[in-house]
Image (tube, rainbow, N blue to C red; front, side, top):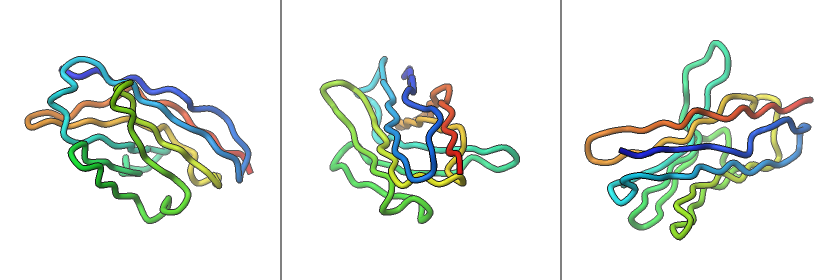
Length: 116
């Protein structure tokens, strides 16, 4: 079992920045990939950024490339999402995600609201 707890969401003006954190606990040795998803009202949950734990390979949604950066701190068992040049369309609940060989885990989500 893996537990994920997000933090760092909030209200920010367009053009501003936020950093989301996701603290992982439990059987974290089994995790092979982690990422951030987001979901806004009336829309499907979508991938924002993803990182492979072995090697650190990353990928991003086209809509956030060049503005968001995913990273991890292995010593703190924490995943980050640095978000810059935020736009109102980035407004959503952001979810941390982790996967091992058999299961997918989700955090409870953190709200990010970008005002115009």
